[in-house]
Length: 431
Image (cartoon, rainbow, N blue to C red; front, side, top):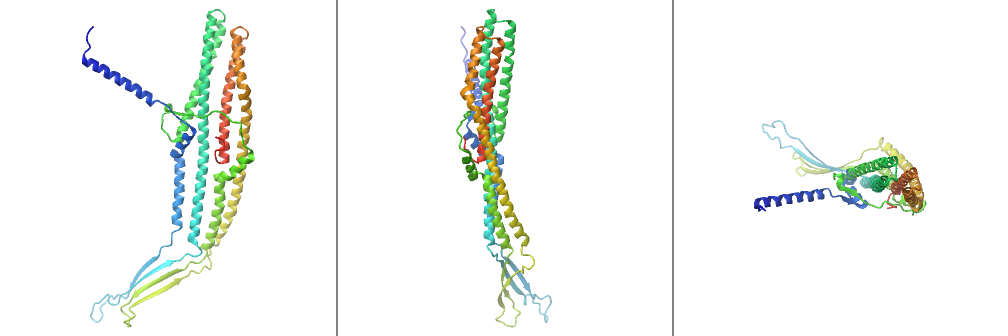
């Protein structure tokens, strides 16, 4: 046996290390990270661009409160007069008789205009905050629906895998029966051909799962590869529902769009008060100092003065804005009533859908799933021992697959309906 050279040994070890490193890196890079609903929601609230842009709008409304409460700026006027432009008795003294007069004027706002502007701006911020919460409510429903669709797609993929694995075992047993002469060639062919349906179901389910993950990542504004992203959560239903009146009252207390409608009435009332205040007269106070060296009175070279300017509101007393804001109060009251009616409609419709899904799911969980499994296993056993026809066997397989898929789809519909009820109520009343 020839000895191995040191260089060859080092190269061999180095190559193994590199290969192991690439294998480990590949396993790490394709490792999936699974997120719960709470984690997905937190990532969405932190990263969704639409939600973040609307949050900036709330900050902008907050900044307008500063502008609304600003006082009018005073005015400074500098004037001069009496400067000579020619010689007097052969003497050139252009500034000897110059009169200098600085003046300051200030507009005084009456009837609490600044306070009313600030109050209206704060109420505008409250409305923007409520509308932001309403936007988040609607976007969270979209996110929740996509999360449920991803869970449903995962469940259907698992069901398709299990059914395909089970059917492959049936095919193996059928081939064994064929070799022993207990099964005709035509029956074996029909059994093997049915496998195409199971393969097709699995491929469709995997494509749907991938599509659902892509759409969920888009909502999260996440560029994570689909292969490394996964979600987890309970894919089941609960038949416990509160009374309809409970959900209605919770919605009236919680719905942000209804809060925004009621806040709009308050802002319209404040704006009407502001319009009435803007129809009042605001005086402008002025004061000035004058230096006039050309006065004959040597003690009157420096003087001060004051003035008050009062606009005469004869024609324009802000009548149009007063009437418009008064009408706006009634308009917002009608809109709030429409929003209230929409709240009841949303809650009633969502409650009916959830209750309908619960009614359909109860017999599936209590009876249909176990019955379909028992029928499949019984017919399969009978067919293997010559007690059932091939058609009965294939129908039993198809019925079991249909019941399982129908149950998974009903669970998905139930979870989507509970999300719709949470949306209608304004908060998560059914986890």
